Length: 442
Image 1 (cartoon, rainbow, N blue to C red):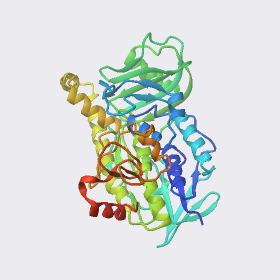
Image 2: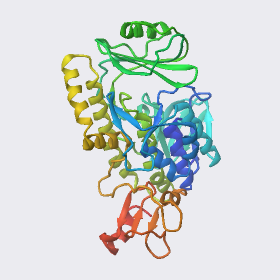
Image 3: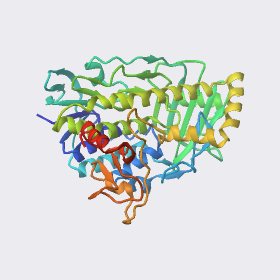
Image 4: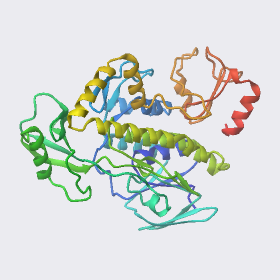
């Protein structure tokens, strides 16, 4: 019997596998695809995700391959990220295919097993284990985690509902070559029908995106380069000599949230638990952060007991609710009518104010996330012994600061969970320390 089976070898599943290995558990990752898809819907890593990777000693390869952008946006309205309270006050522009490659390399380095070309076809569970049926036989484990995307087979087989709001617009994304590209990048140029973008992520090709608010197309219908060309001509009046598509996809603003994150011994993370319009680049980041929250708790459930598992949903589901809310708001702010244009003007003026810029920036970057009954995330800092605080989290274990036989620093004593949130501080007293150690199994 396996210890944990993770269905889905994308960023969420691979990050979860790494966390489980650090927690002393041997996960098996099952992936439907034969190899990396090469598709890159996501194109950036936000500050909190960079902090997470730093806490596990994984960040440097990502920084080496990415491009640092000191800005972000809310519905296309510019935001200044340079003042974010973190070592990483920027958006790291790095395509999803590169993120997946680096995460898989780290997972394999830790001894994670990844098996490909395996599709899940059935699921049954008892009080003690879950058995999943696949195209290559059955696999049994105490826990199964569905990280298999918005159309999650695991979620459906576990009987978990996926309520939400339907699509109200149609978007097309294409990675293509352009014979006559625009002189400068174009981002969310507004038109009477919606907006369009042309971005040069890497030399030799461009990412073209169009958003049409006057019709909703079937997301599953076949799509061709001619569909993208027609939409771009409608918005921009030219197709810029579009040719040689690498990848074309249709998507929309449907937003859904799983009615629960756990059914018995089956759990969900990432897009399997929540989908939304990709405004502000929050989807991949939210999934990786799901895995970071779940990993150490699930490891303890496998090796000890399940007491912590309910805190996964109670902590992470409200985060997803807020992401769905702000992406719905961003979609509304990109509609092409006169009333929306007036509202955008007001918000653009407000976003120039320091407090508004900071609030929106920290929300998109994931730096303001808080969990009920737990202290805030701890930012990295230099310590008296010449190390950085985040270096002490590389093993995936909790960190005790400012006590005898603990990590020395120049602040009040503090116990920090493996995910970087404060479980106890000196002002709470000694009895509270014992309660925190017991509650969080630290």
